[in-house]
Length: 449
Image (cartoon, rainbow, N blue to C red; front, side, top):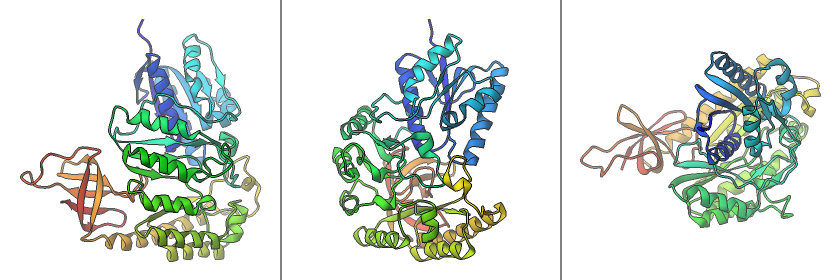
C-alpha cells in the first residue's frame, strides 16, 4: 500500500529549518513521499516560529491558508509543530479545530508517532517541557540548496534576555556531544559536495558549558574545520559575553572558516543592556571588537540591534546610533522591540510608542546604509572569492562572498566570462574569483576572472 504524501512549510530561522529537515528525514526513511510544499498532499506539516509578534502572525496566516486548502480537499490533515505550537497549542486547538495534531518545539523526533496517530484519525497533542539533552543524529531531508546546509550544535538558551521567550519555549541550554556533531557533518557530506557549512544554535558561544563544564566552541570549530568537508565554514549567533580569545585565534588561523563574525550587541547603553539582561557592558563589547579587528584584520562584523526597548530615552538611542557610526559594522540588522508575553520586559514601564520605534528604526537603517555603501566602495578593483548561487537571464550570476551569510546579507552580481574564455558554465555551489567593478549600498558587482 502506497504511503501518504507529506508536505512541509518551515517558518522562522535556520534553527527551525534544521528541525524541519530532521522531521522529513525521519518520515522519508519510513517510506513516506516528501514534498517541500503543502498543496495537494495528504498531510501538511507547518513548523512555526513565535519569537516576535510578526512571526506569530505569519504562522497563523499560513495555518489559516492550510485550513482553506483542507476545506477544498487539497490537504487531508494538518500538523502544527514548533514554537507557536509549544507556546499556544491550547488556544490554537480551541480556535482552529481544523488542526489535526500538535507537536512541541523540542518534540520533532516524535513526528512519526504524530503522523501515525493522524492517519488513525486520532488527534495527538505531543507538547512536552524541553528538558532532554540535545544529542540527536538523524537522517535529514535538506530544504536548503544542495550546496550549503546548517548544523545545529545546541538547543535552548540560558541567557534569559528580558525581551526573549526562547528560554520559555525551548528550555535550558543543551549542547550536543562533539562526536554527535562530527558524525552529522560526515553523514551530510558523505554523498554530496557541500560548499558551505553554517554552524548554528541560539547562542553558539555557550557550546559545551552544560556537558563539559567549560566553553568548547573553539575546539569544536577546529575539529569541524580539520574534517575539511566544506570549502567554507560559517559561525552564526554568537554572544559577545562568551566570545573567547581562543575562538578569535581559531577563526583567524583556519583558512576554511569564514572571516565573518556574527556578534549581536542589541544596544550600546549600559542601562538598557542591564535592563535587557545581556550580562555585558558597552566597554567590554568595544574591547572585544577592537581585539577581533586587530587579530583578524580581514574580518567582517555583523550585528543586530533592538530599538524602542521599554524606557529607551532619546539620549540612549543616540548612544546606540553613535556606537554604530563609530564601530562601522560591515553588516547590521535592526529590529523593533516586540512586547512578548511571559517575558520580564513585558511588564516594564514606559513602553515606547510604535511611531517612535519606527522612526528610530528608519534612522538606524539610514545610518547603516551610508556605512555599508562606503565599505562596499573600498572593494573596488579588488578580487573576491564568490560562491555562485544562480544564473540570471541577463547573463549575470548571483553569488555571495564569505562576508555574506545566506538569505540575510548582500550579494555579488557577477558578469560571466565570454564563451571563449570560460571552460564551463558555473553551477550553484561553484566558486569564482571575481574582480569588483561597481558597488551598491549593500551589494557588489564584478567580473569573473
